[in-house]
Amino acid sequence: MGYTITEKILLAHARGVKKIAPNDFIMAKVDFCFGNDITAPIAIREFRKLGKKKVFNQNRIGLIPDHFLPAKDMKSANQAVVLKDFAREYGIANYFEVGRMGIEHALLPERGLIIPGDLTVGADSHTCTHGALGAFATGVGSTDLAYVMAFGECWFRVPESIKLVFTGRPRKWVGGKDLILHAIRDLGVSGALYRSIEITGDVIENFSMDDRFTMCNMAIEAGAKSGIIAPDKTTERYVRSRIREHKPLRQSYRLYRSDEDAVYADIRKYNISRLEPLVAAPHLPSNVKPVSEFKDVKVDQVVIGSCTNGRISDLKQASVVLKNKKVNPHTRLIVIPATQAVYAEAVKQGYAEIFVASGGVFCTPNCGPCLGGHMGVLSEGEVAISTTNRNFVGRMGHPGSFVYLANPAIAAASAVKGKITHPSDL
Image (cartoon, rainbow, N blue to C red):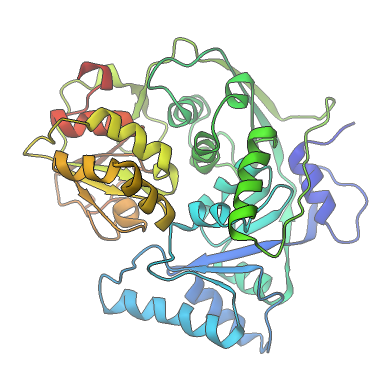
């Protein structure tokens, strides 16, 4: 019996075992771990209780205060200072402040700090994003992060795997966001609970890394432990370019693929040739319908950005829709690039100018309103359409607000019309 890509990576990192099977408990070496300004302060407090004088590796820990910086208030400023002081005290190389910062799940791959074959943990549920690199990446609690920072290992239950096979030819305006929403609609928000979602098919082979990151990012919205895509030439081109530019200390990586006789808990096949661009309605990412079914939904706010869709191709897609058009006067458009490098490239390519000229606001890289943090928190009764990943009750502000999820093209078109709109309708 063969192994899935997830099982192979876990076995390669497991301590004291020569074979594994789903639901086994293992201790495994961690290649890279990280936390943000919400989760890392708790981990740091627990780390100090261990009495350790050193972290397991100063170069394999990331501290990224991306949720509330630039600080929105005194509490968020104090949270960020905890990270800064700890990074200085323990010599953490990968501490990223304002000006070098980005949303953790976009910044770390961009810097070449997470590579194929890695076992990565982060104190944030959307750590599964990094599975797009052919790594096993999963979210952990802050106390687990503290242990990893101290000892460089963590316990895991080996997950079963679900294989998603995407075939066909996507229509115009259909991308990774639509495909993963389609899968979440099918699986439900707990349909992949504690399982690894392995994303495959000829559609994926032709997708960019940005689309792959988007799809793995939202594996957690189906309850998955991780999302993963087997690395190929597209992956290697991306990783080599990141290594060439940033020269991280770790530059060698290992490419894993599932065996032909690997065993899956479930296999779902989707021919997406006739799939329309999709929208997830409140209050679940699985409440998904074609955009054409939302013609009369007015929106107060549009958000383009986040760890899901804040990369340069996302901003390009939105700017194509927005060029030479104006945002509806009754709608706010907030654009948040995922990293400082994306910010700079958007300025260079003229996308930032398009957003501003249209009547939108172009913000500094951070998580912004995605978690109801700042820079776009919703009031009671307000409606937003966003390229973010969750639309639970109160996710973006008041419990009486409403969030719809969509790809960047739909979001941009909706900003122009002031209501949820198919890009082709412009």
